[in-house]
Length: 243
Image 1: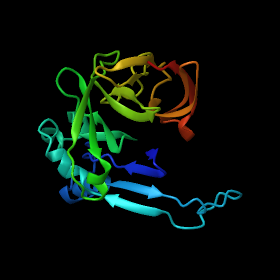
Image 2: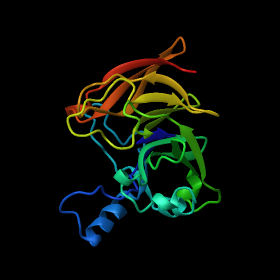
Image 3: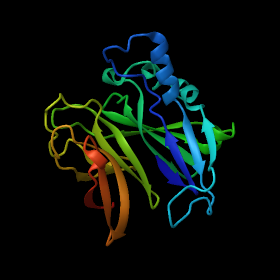
Image 4: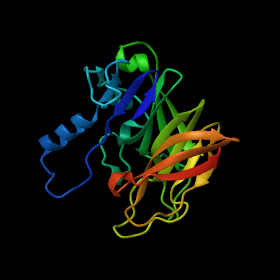
């Protein structure tokens, strides 16, 4: 999820389900793919929330877009991966940000040749208003984890004109294998990705999934790191310099 211009943007994975026992029926798989292949833009009016109770007083404005799958299929470097599950380096979106009038979709997979992770940039008008424009690919070399496995995008954060990338392995480690220092890292984008921080290993099955900015001082950003696995996301403060 991302917030920009007074609106929240919520994106599905746009990927195919992982191979799981009991999920064999083609119709069920396709239904799950369709359900995850949407983007929502949600705006709340200033008076729609009771600031005392936190209760929603009026329905927000919601816009739905299903344009992205066709845009993905039109990208020669992405189309071959669109029908593959994640464990086969298939297409899966796991990060989203909005910058300069474009939605940026961070792909956990595929990782392209040369360990290049992909961020797909699409004008908002193209997604929500059938407007003109074209999608572009930003390809960043995010390196490998401690086992030599390619890393993709696990979260995106647009902050003060910069794009911060939480990088992690495309596929999770085997069950019970601890995540080590440097398996996950934070980068900033540019002509080449600049590594800002190698994250600690926080234990088996505790996977960094999101960054939430708290504030900046003396060129350093304080943020909360949230995890997949622990109850409540186990928010953990981190700090790193901004290049």
